[in-house]
Image (cartoon, rainbow, N blue to C red; front, top):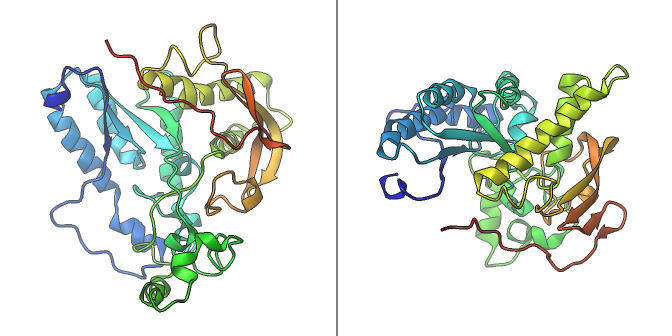
Length: 335
C-alpha cells in the first residue's frame, strides 16, 4: 500500500485469508456442503479486517474488494467507509443468482472461490446492492468469468457439460483420451470425479450477465407480473446500467469514454428484449467451452443486438458480424 500511496490507481484484493487453526472439514469431497465448510465466511472477514488494518499506510489510496461473497463482510466495509477509508466492493452474477442449497453432489460447475453461499446470504447481498445509490458498499457487479475445458471440472457423466455429454472432443482430451502417456492422468481424473476440492474453480457466465440479473430482479420486484409498473421496470434497468457499466467505467478511469450514452462517449449499445424467456443451452452460450452452472436454466431477458463504437457487431439471429475481434486496448490517461 505504501508504495502505491501517491499513485493514481486502485488497489484490488481477492479477500480470503485462512486462520492459523482452521478445523479440517469432514464429509464427502463431492458434497458441496463439505467444500463450503472449507471456505467459511470468516475467510473473507479476516482478509477484510487485515486490509483495513493496513489502510492507514495509504489513507487516500482507493481500495477495492473483488468478488465479495460473504454478507458478514458488509458491516466491516460500511463502518470503514463511514470513517473515511476509500474502500468499495463488487459482487458477481453467481453470488446474486445461485445458492448453496440448490447445488447437487458432484456438480462442480458451481465451484468458485469465494464460494457460492446460502440463499439467505444471497438475499443480504441483494439488500446491499439496493443501497448502492446511497451508502451501499457494493458499487459494481461483474462476471469474474473463469472458463475451463470440461475435463478440468471433473464432472460426473450425469452432469450437463461433462466430457460424456460434450459435443467437442477437443475440450476433453486430458480426461478422455486413452493413451499410454495419459493413463495416469486419466486414472486420477476418474478417482477425483465430482470432487469440489480437485476440480477447477471458476464460473462461466460471460454474455449471460444481463439476463441473469434481469431474471433475479424480475423475481424479486415482480417485474414479470401484469401489475408491474413502467417506472419500477425502468428504474431496475437503470440500476443495472449503473452497477455494470457506469460505475465500472468510473472505477477504472474510463468515465469519459465508456459507461454512458452521451456526446463524446463511445456508442456502445445493447438492444435488450426485457420480456423474452429462453433456456440456456450450449447453442446459446457464446463462450468456447460450454460448461456453465446456468445450463438448463430459464432466463428472462435476451440481448438481441450489440453495438460497439457505433458499429453493429452482434445480432441474435445472425451471430457475430465478424470473426475478427474489433476491441481495442483501453488505458486510463495518466498525467
